[in-house]
Image 1 (cartoon, rainbow, N blue to C red):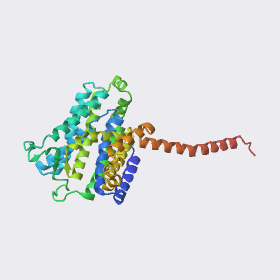
Image 2: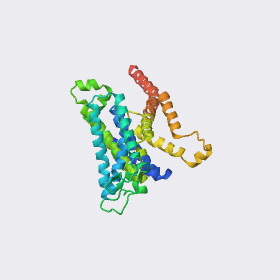
Image 3: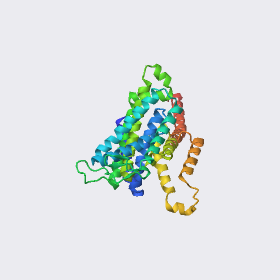
Image 4: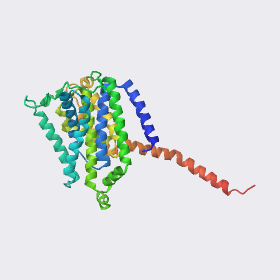
Length: 353
């Protein structure tokens, strides 16, 4: 990634960061930014590593719970912030090592990750009793954990980061994670990872340790998902077992497919757009229009969108737009270049006066 690309990405991100609050609520924007980071994690693991993880919510929910439990027990939010990255990454590394060194195929890998997420969802739903306590924090079962300390300015525990400041912080973290992922993909490790996606056997025959690199990529994606869960917890100020749920696990897959697997910006845009659509469908005004039997349920709408994209835009939104723009540019530039070339050839063939 060149310095020019980094500069252009930062400029575009800065413009968006200050323009979006003019049109949308900052709390919703903070949530959408956390969704975008979660989609980025799966976009990296699946789109570039070829690892279909159906249980990315396991690391997302784990990051949220680790942050909340650490913040309650230590009273220090920043220790929970860093642990929310490290522990999901470590858990992903252990799980990935067992799967990749166990030579699981893609289908079984997707099933195992989904089952892990559902196990965590089931377990956390059954922790409502008083005996389910970690230090001073009660797990709360299906009611979740509310009222934990949120992020604050380092060195000043009373200066909480919330509202617009939390939005700016989350947006900056999202941009930094995007740039870090772009840099990683441009490194030798990233190029080998893309080669694994295209032909794993050939990369292995070249002498690279395929399983170690897939484990490292899986752990990196788990760390990003854990960070997304931490940021979401700070925005919502409550966490529940739904963070591990099947519904959210399916939504992440749809975000990546709609935005465009094989890109980084595509899953982020897909998460933000579909996250906003889900918010709109949940508004009371929309429900009142259709009455109690509302046909515009988010699950039905998302399923319809997924089918339409698979049928008509299988590469996703961002790759399709790039293709259209490329064809339009060639269509405008082609005749001009050919006519200019013909004029040049005619001038060369003309005899000198």
